Length: 564
Image 1 (spheres, rainbow, N blue to C red):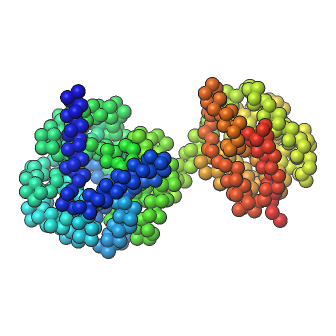
Image 2: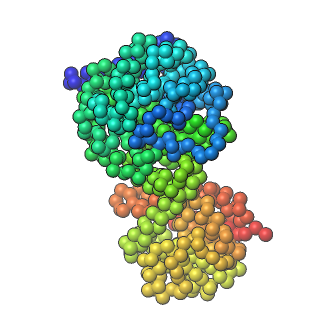
Image 3: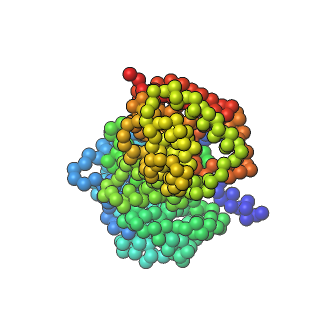
């Protein structure tokens, strides 16, 4: 019990030491405002996020050659415009309007040559009297005069990059002999000018169990220095080095270390909202060229602050599922869907990928995964539940009544599955083609004797048909619009789709029973509303001609006719 009380005492001391600056009363008031607003948002269940701060990289020039450095890959080739002091002033103001009160400046090495004077100018226009100002440095060029100038400019915290408590290990990792000694010598000078000292440490699968890390933790604990851990990622010079990343077992060990070293933190620990990934929600990283990234280790350009306002860029990111809530773990470490797309792009691209490039590849990866799930589904789905039979009969009954009233001679059933609706079309005398991405589904249809059934993707299908039919297909895609457009592309006259009605009370009961007592949804289905489908078709040259209820409104037939 005493150990637990002691741990929380140290954590409170950490918050007080690094989070509250009484000599900056405006900052304290803004901090209180943000915390209260965040609590209100949480209490009311509002999905709103307060921007906590910005990490600015003011230069990628550096006097070190660290083995893990990522700046080279973020530096565009040729002549490229960098942000001016006026740009920083404007972006800081835009960030403050979103709630930001912490501004961190890093490199490269910000104390190098002419870049140090530039740093001081940027800090002075960053409203330092009412914001928390942090400077991250490798410490090799720090001297008393520079520390004094930073204190005068309004810096609160100097964050030192130290990766081992053993001098030789640190110097080897940073590839700069004597750097550890320079760092140790700078600490008394930083403290002399009443600035906070914190430590950044890169931790890899190799170093987490090392004696060097143990000595560094003991040093930070003895001196009550916050030590922020940066988990190794296969980015920059480490691109492709998955073996450097922490495993889940390593992370369990890291969490055990926290019990003994309460000053050991991750960037997850400072959120206003839930503990978890803060990227885009509470923090952003901006390169010297104005590119905005979700965080310092997610190198995807969300947009550029020299082309559009910061708020527009952030809102774009918050519409994307990876950044619109607090993931319990780092996306680049443990979110497999994200990692597959992100690391593939990093391996393929010489420069930083754009958000569109990321989303396009992510959609391809998700679609391929979905297609595999569908084949697995049809491998298991040889029998239909009693409820499923009732719903199927309702669909077939409507088709037998509706289709003859339409002026149709040809039809295509997209995602024909086991062929129950395809069979109706062929019996009605329509020249019909069935396509599906599941080899198992195609084989089932062929064994039934159904004609003209092929293994084919909607996006690759060709030809024109009087009637394009799809039963429960497009709601499975995270962005259904492109697939709806493919349905329209194939149509001469009509598109007929069957969609779940997620507003139906009975549908909600059936889904609950399926998930509670059955197998639930093997295929992910997004809860789109019927008006969303109608809106997309009507914006693209089709009008809703008829709407029919299926099985007490649990599903709906939506018949769209091409506008003349």
